[in-house]
Image (cartoon, rainbow, N blue to C red; front, side, top):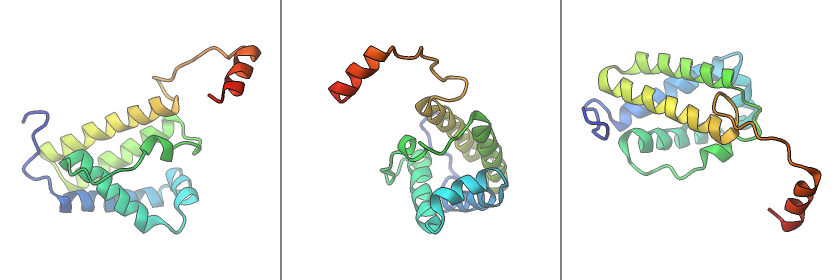
Length: 146
């Protein structure tokens, strides 16, 4: 299979099944469940729809997702261990829902997404450890509105 080739067993129905299986497990997870519940509370149905669009865009290139994942994950206090737990639950859901090339594609994309989110949130092994700004630089930045 070529990198951009869609596995034959990949479909919208499979994406929907995976999303529902995975987030059902997230909601029951003692660590991740409360993080998601605090953000989503009574908006789970909307979130599931958005995640189906997201994974459809990722796996099927449907282009339906138009959100900003990095922004959505800011302020949650996430740590690298949370991403490892997320990936573990996701991989188990993938293996329960599909196999072969479709499973490989979902797992590959999930790892890339987790890496990207951690970079965007500046946590994990790829975090930038920048020196603190000097007070005058911070004041100049504040005054310039940057």
